Length: 172
Image (tube, rainbow, N blue to C red; front, top):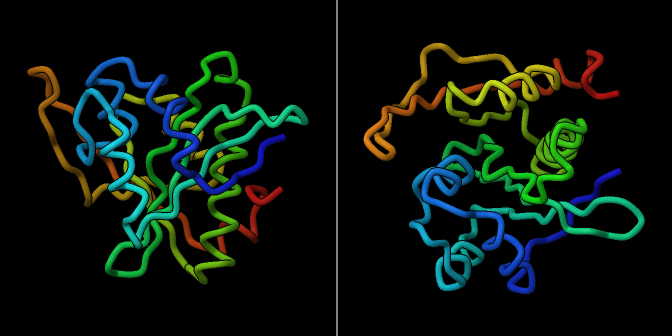
């Protein structure tokens, strides 16, 4: 069982410890940070009024295992971003789906969204499958390309509509 709690400066050290190289940082956060991730960058991140950052807590022991964010863009469509299960022993256990479902519940209820989007790199098939299991669909008309360590990374956009999330099996 996971829960989301507000991400604060008390959480900086564990997040920084999960990012070991530039590729990990870009996979996690896109290009909003530079490697190495620092507390100064995270202080600036925390004050962005469009950002709703969470630490992901697991189990009765309240172990911080990850990070996630809902970013409210200028078009008022929430974007799920900067999702990571940083503690690797908790990966591949279906917790990513739980995190995404919690983020969607917040987006659809607290922010009254009717649609939520996210971006993911096309080579990150485990993340894409996670998002599809929750009900996200690929938006084939929106892609971006960036160069990372001399390699081309393609970011694809995915979306889910509120009615599809609650009317289907994804909410369960």
